Length: 498
Ligand code: BG6
Image (cartoon, rainbow, N blue to C red):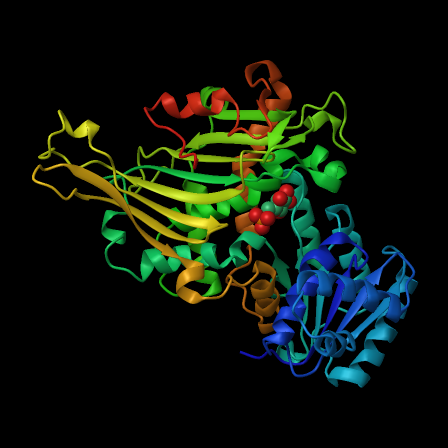
């Protein structure tokens, strides 16, 4: 599993993501001896810093994230880190970068493999890739030896057209095999285990269709607000931030057909096929089946939190949504008529992400219910985070002389069974990039298919605001009433943990 020696060149190396996620993930791989034998990490950003300044920043992040790590292991990891600064648009800066990378190759790897990680706002993606390509840094050797790979953080564009333009540009500069588009949800252990649960157990797949499944709910509730990312979020909103990527990718894993092989192309193709089968929106479904809302001041965990419009870098008259709920259908034989509900929002009651598959009720009630409609259903819940695991609600007899039924949960908790916290998503994805495994990354068709679902909603909101009014919900609640009503119309309810 150990990747070949390589340099990891991080663009945007003075930014938050690098210290919050990337450095801790690379360090964890190092501790678990999954980094290449020979590697270097080269930070690149506009901010001027020496190698030592960069290491000190990284040291702080690592000591915060890994409180129990011994100082000498952190020192040893940091001895692989260097830094260089420059303007992203200036070709001269790339010459300097190339020089520094060559020095690192002599000092550390003796190989020219390079992984470029673009932890940058999307407006800079095209520029950086052009300059990298002009300066020859992304040229690969014969049969990809040495290799050069470029990792892109979401968002990929801000609508369908801009995503297509970006993709055309990238593909004119790089081979498709050099492009790694990250959706960090695909790197989460619990998201990956969806496919294992479905396709490594015989008992679920025969029931996994419209005959036996009543509805599916996917919730990603966050208790945090927009924090210091107000500037970005105000432009993006919840639909672009969470649905275009994470929500639709999870949906595709739960509902896609089994791939014939567990390899990138096969898995990516099935995910795309599923997204393409989502029923296109009509004016009526755009109006009736989607709810957008923004939080007002409230309380979370006994702490007062402010109105979305009062957060830093947010327009006081903002109409950006911090919550979306939607109902959609998949037009294929397997899922015909099964409502799929998705919701996500910030400043909700608690942090809780789960996928709940509710089965249909038994056809005839033997056990005292007036009709089978009153029988409780079996529910399979994949708990994505926190408290990662799987719960299956079943019904059994209560002890005693009468035939009374009780519902209970067969429950698997990741932390109890495996005795380790799930690996961080970025760890897995960075390792896969170094290994050249693209299974957990998005294909260009996947990004396009997701935007094709999201674009009509954005247009509708923009063109017909009166038909899709922005609702409000109190911070600390489970969202606006309109979101509950959306399910009630089909006789359903959101599963809200207490
Ligand atoms: C990011 C979004 O992609 O995912 C954030 O931009 C969101 O707004 C985050 O908070 C959620 O990720 P996680 O891993 O904390 O569930």
